[in-house]
Length: 311
Length: 247
Image 1: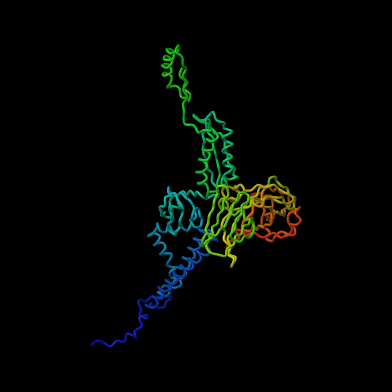
Image 2 (image 1 turned 120 degrees about the horizontal axis):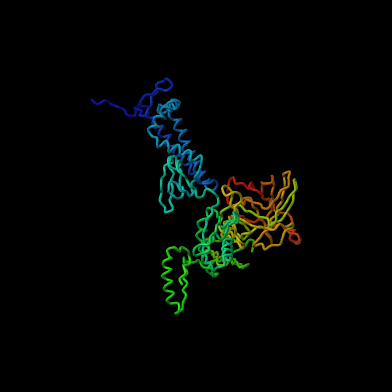
């Protein structure tokens, strides 16, 4: 005989899944409490996401991206953490007991997941010390690019050729970081060679004038243009210019070609490496020349200067 | 050139050519200045064009909200003294499109006729990039081309108990208020705190009177210009600038 069961009388939500002890009292964890726990957690995730989306939209023009992201992450994980701890009693866990157990559990977890904890702690210190920010151009461990995100465990870098590289925070924190945009301005340098026959003063004047016409070549720190070296084939002029970090690369690439073109327009040329040979002509000296050429060949190995003379 | 203009509109001045013409169902904005040409399409009816001076921080590219004016000659100001001087500043011409119904403005174009230069105020490690301008120091407002330069009335107030040397002033564009009517005008103040620091800001009220030697103009109030920075609905943005790296 099959018993006559009225399913409407059964309350599934009151079905006890397991028993726990909280503050010395036995506590039944029902299916309803478990579902409530899941529901509250899910709703809090949704609510936290909605709040972060709203904050990101409303504050994106008012707060710098790196600060905004840090605040949003703190708010998101902070909210979830508080909600999670406060609803633990629903599934029969005592938050105060959890805190006590935390010490022991921390040690166990610490040993079990050294790398993760290391990355987590490094991520925390990266957010506090802030050697890099989202959007910065950096070089970390031989990887160059833009910081696209600083997460709790890892940092994401978009390389200049568009690849996404994930670097564990422990590596970021313990290695040398070069922040290419850490300071508001940056300097670049060229060496421009001109012929010995050209007027170096005129070349310097032309280069200074070109720099002066460039808006992003900073007035202060002032640019410097000077003859640095009397080279093998050219008089070498050094050009040093400071520019805002955001405009540094564009100015550097634009200005060099402008200097080359303008110098040539003014009859000043950038010479190729060259060697000057002097020939003394005359039939009478033909024999003597051949003899002296032989002699010159002997001493050629000794000569190591620019101008070699053949008699 | 400055002012409100009904469409269609065209003007040529100082080598600048600006026009807004109806082509079919839309308006075509064209601007040429030297080799620089801009063309934009504006959809819809009932529009008007506003041309006025704007903060000199938008061309060739907006990279900083700060303007540094270097004085041609260093000024010395005694302890507790208050003096008024006149400086020049670069002007940028802002062209706005406006909807007649709700006076909603949008920037269409910005151009400048003067040389552009940037500089660093402060140290390489923590200074600020500023738009750079060098000005003579006048005791009365100079006559200038309003498409190129404006007049800044600067009130210097030495609140310290020692003499100070002043060779520059840095201003934040977010508090900048420009006024125009034949000339371009701005009123600012600089409160000197000690030998190395000062605080600068702008006076938000339009100046009473005007240029000396232009008596008729003195009786007219200047119009307040729409600023590009003023259009932005920003929250907590400092309107003053603290000069902490020397005067």
